[in-house]
Image (cartoon, rainbow, N blue to C red; front, side):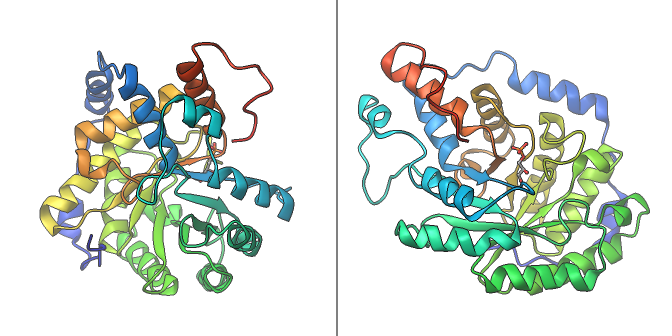
Length: 323
Ligand SMILES: O=C[C@H](O)COP(=O)(O)O
């Protein structure tokens, strides 16, 4: 798949954007209503969701040992006895692991080290947040240095935060230039996800415009939230971003990924997001090259749902705590 190279900033396109928030909410209701995923499809969708997770720890109390534990969970997110009971056969083409682990820049080295030990380097990505995460309220110079640091330590993906002040004051050219410089700092091989922090962008039109600017500046993914805003990944925000991705694809011919993140906790959340993506963007987006969940607490609930599906009984409460 060709990666998005970006394009020139098109202010005319931005000025034509006008999103009606009520219509967005109604549309989400319509998309989700009456859609049921049942039987084997249910288990298959949950396994698909697992392979799309960026398993995340972003705590001030992160240490090399909890990052190592996260990596082990990323490599074997669903217990073997559940996979066996589901009749799932692992091979080189299909294996159940999360798409990435996502950590702070200072913990990238720990993640790389552990994944190397597990022989999972190159199979599970190491995503690092950067650029003054979560607020982005740092000088551009230090924000770019953070990217350089994380790349140098072995990150294969960088989740940058955009400068929300520039969105709220309508400084689209400056925003475009900053994100372009961030993309350049990532280098040619490291994928860049741009976190819009949608809960702080004030209007749905701003979310659509910021999505377009991030894509025009060359983002590989656009991501809803840091997980630290008051409002994080909601389906209406997701719909607005997915529509922007679709329009960008129709005009420019490049597929940009979507990563909802922040507050995604349950099997139902996961299924609803997959339904939304399938309905708005289509099957091409239903894989971890174009869709990710940023989540610290989703995996446990999915594993528990798969246990129940496989063994026809509820798991014990202590069973699936991590993730
Ligand atoms: O980028 C990922 C988010 O920080 C995850 O947020 P969460 O802890 O609410 O799942």
